[in-house]
Length: 163
Image (tube, rainbow, N blue to C red; front, side):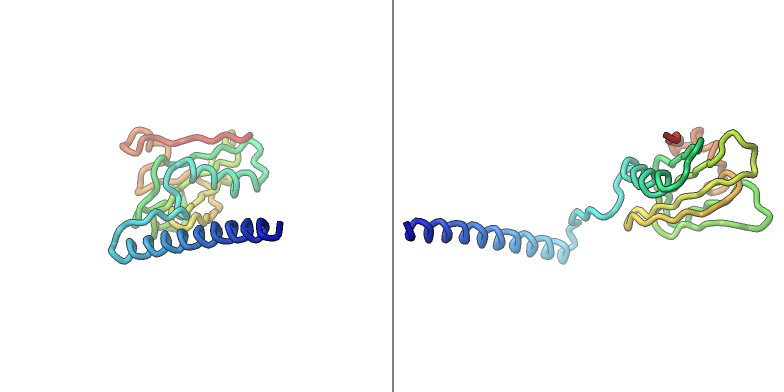
């Protein structure tokens, strides 16, 4: 009986060690590929609008009292050098994009005439970090009103209504 138990323990131990060796081998292959300049899949960044929308809903919309708020998210991320500005501003406010960034516009009271509280949401595509900026006017992207984007090559806005 003791011999059988020792044999089972030995087999389990051997399986565990072989799994560790296999993982170490895969890790070594990834490092080798990165050193050779081969693109290795990294899962931290945002790869599509669904992931950006999920971050917007979970971190911005659900954590606030949305009421009748409506959120709009661009179909593609903004690129380095793109500029977001309020449609109207007493001062020259602008948000220059430094990294690939998903942009959303949250209208907290869409039935109200402008100016009224709105939020600009910037979600870094590489780090998934988000920044919320309070404003009073709808945004322009590179001097194009967000309402005119659907008529451009951008493909139109995606709308998220309050729940």
